[in-house]
Image (cartoon, rainbow, N blue to C red; front, top):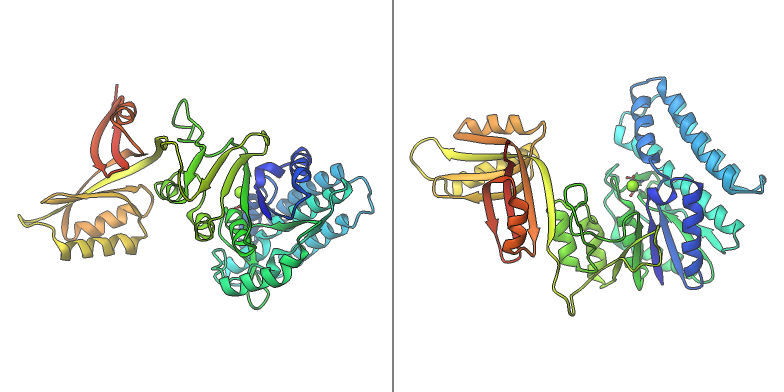
Length: 422
Ligand code: ASP
Ligand code: MG
């Protein structure tokens, strides 16, 4: 069986729903589960609504009306029979939301967030399932919350793997066959039946969970790009599509900051050796990228990851001593306490240098370090990571850049650089 995942961009309007319906039709002869995100920017809109509600800002009402109008317009454009039960289903979801908004906000923001923001996926899947029915594709709408069980860490629900796997195998697997199952990404539920979410962009992870528990033959994530590229086109000309990638490559690339696929998504697939296809919903006949266990033939293409707005911090002992293990453990503790992730680090006899994302937490961290150490830093730096590098690729990215720090391992080089001022 196959699992498909369609993200928000693929269903941002009626045209998008028609398009994915044709993709689904092509594969509907075989057992298929389809995981769908909220339409377009709905999750952002619901987030704004939730914040307004918490501030007791009357803007919340207007935001709700916008979300309602957008979904009703898409449903009205797609569904010909105005008595189709989907209109009641959408209406009921909005009524439930209105009830929440009429009460005083519950004290726990994250709890309220999940009850409100989960609506996006419920709405989108209702509309898609109804449209598939109208277009003669046998399908069934599935509430993911009956299968994806989490603890009560709202906004970052942690999966209860055993219970989830049990439910999916016992109750979902038997439903697969001559009907396409349509379900939501991103959402789950607690043992008390409250809705949780898995963290922003969590739909890929949901799809991987379903694929794992159903022992799927493959997972396909349909995106608006033709596959995984070797660099972000925002920073790089002449990007190349990567045809094959190993699971470890995919995890490493996302660790270094590539906007590929969340490592949380890769692990479950890797554990069962389920291939992941990344394909374009705009060019569905093209093969895309496959992420799988190992290469058979070709050499990997160099991949480039650019992280902007870095602060390069170097920590020196105040006296003539070296920084050794005790010092390191203290320095790392300061970074951990500040919640600042180290992107690359290097030590010499007398100093310890790190590059971090420069954000509002960093100045306080620098102050903390300065209580004991001499601390210097440069701001406005870039961190360039090249996996499967060679000298030519290094020369290419160093054009017009001044190099501050370089670190090489067998497959990966990391360069902290600054644009040369002209
Ligand atoms: N709709 C959710 C989000 O925008 C989940 C997802 O799209 O993966 O974060
Ligand atoms: Mg999204």
